[in-house]
Image 1 (spheres, rainbow, N blue to C red):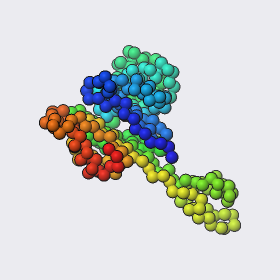
Image 2: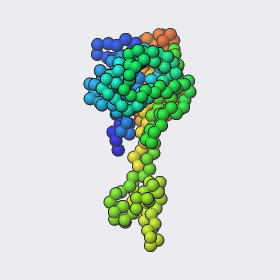
Image 3: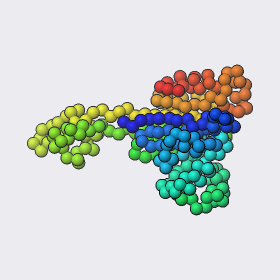
Image 4: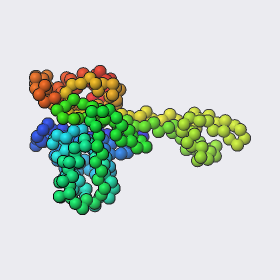
Length: 267
């Protein structure tokens, strides 16, 4: 099974620090790379990871505060200068089009690849992306502007075929889909070969939830219940709790309470 990995490229609040860039994160799941938020300095941090940015085909933006999007234009420019050809999709609030299109046309009128901005409604919990391995849904959050988190879940891939058994029983390739669905195999002579002899259980699917800027809200608990890993912002400690009402962020204690209520495996 492919390795799942979550890399924080930056987690600074509002202004970047010398040793901490703005919000940007890289998720590797089912052999695919997903960029989540793209704050200032994101492409520099990506270079330091050694990751090939051409493998990133989808970028997910939680909300349109500058510290989560100011790295987009430089990244797009670099990808174009390097001759990228594969399409790239940015999933974000519809207003991103108004913000980025004039700049893109001015600085990158000859973009080397197809860029699509897929509008999402941060106020709804709904599927916004799906391929043959992963489903991505929005998690409505509580912030000063429309904001959402993202829930990534792998799809069930069916039972795993034991290749040696295919040769041993001379099983045709056409029978594989049925075997993956749990069916037994019947030979031309009518003999039944149990599915359990030909396949093994699939690896459990993995899930990841990203909850960026948000005030404490238990409305997300049922959505993220039982996920393998939760990334949840914690801008303040309890001593600064009074500032939450104005900024609509969370404390470290509050994020831990959410993780506990949701029964997540790792915070």
